[in-house]
Length: 478
Image 1 (cartoon, helix red, strand yellow):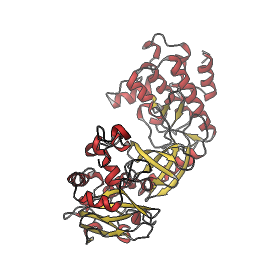
Image 2 (cartoon, rainbow, N blue to C red):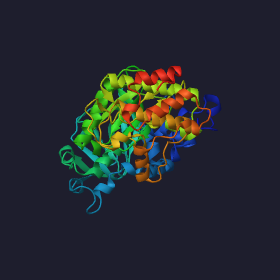
Image 3 (cartoon, rainbow, N blue to C red):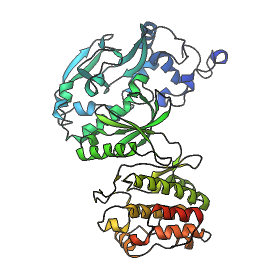
Image 4 (cartoon, rainbow, N blue to C red):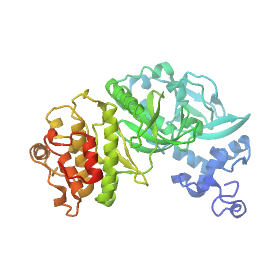
């Protein structure tokens, strides 16, 4: 590092180790001593307000630096999920709209994207590298690199907003030019490409990107915390309040599915009207980058499922406390006209203080308006659902009963190695009493589980008030 503040550097004892060099989030070629390159060559400085030389000096030194060129070479292949080349190279690969793109050559040193300007084209780099420059207070601050296979100026395609930064050619660049009208002609049926575009947007929100790139409305992503079949979830921050949030981004190929889009919006609408201590909160929904984002309460902790996997059965008093909280959440949602339809240990989150939250309302529906689809985690589906009946509060109670059985025994009540036999047993044979596996199980917990899991819905708790009374007082009435 030019400043000598890398670990063991000549200035590290006097001035301390550079925060960039000590940042463990940088990996691979950017880790440890080399992380400081973000201070010098890429992100201007990690030394608070001290700028280590001007941009012209950096460009001159970096262009002749062997390490810098090694970094450029690695960045060209570091994340192939977000590289467009496979869609524009070779006959028969990708949609025809991308295979017919025009090419351009951009001389070294030329600026081809301009901060604050509305532009109607983006670029896919075939060869060469560019540098992203943020202009602030009349000064240029290097913020990022764009290399082989990268999409440059994606805002022209996704949002139509002015470019957030300048981009200059560090070396001569050969690139394909993709106009917004060409992008708009990508067929909705091309699910592979839309899935790829999800990864492009996800890469934009990578924690290494400039802050301005990682904003959605007044929210900023900080890191990916989960990936699912229909969404990517980020940890983020509300820039207005400073509070942490979770940001769920819908995958682009799912946006093209009108039925799924309706369901995704329904989840946000349902959660928006539920305000309860034991139900995850939704703060906002933002439409951007040709997809949807749900801004939710950020939860620190783990699911009941993770607890079971990591530490086995849950202590009786703790299990009772969790079940009481879950019952109040399910009861409140039902009183607001909502059935969750996917009660299971994976959808019950618990924080360090054992405060429980019911999450993932993606399958939820209004009471009496169930679509009768057999969805939800199969081991927790009530027998009547398997037989084609609609979801109800009684099926919610059954799912919680199976969850409770799993909490205290560490396993589900029926063998699941043979799906047909498993289904038949569930519809014909009452669950074994959990105290047979857990001899010291308190009577009220045993009775709660057995009654919640009755095959006949009419023999279960008539409502959550009855279930809560048993859990809270140990009442043994049937």
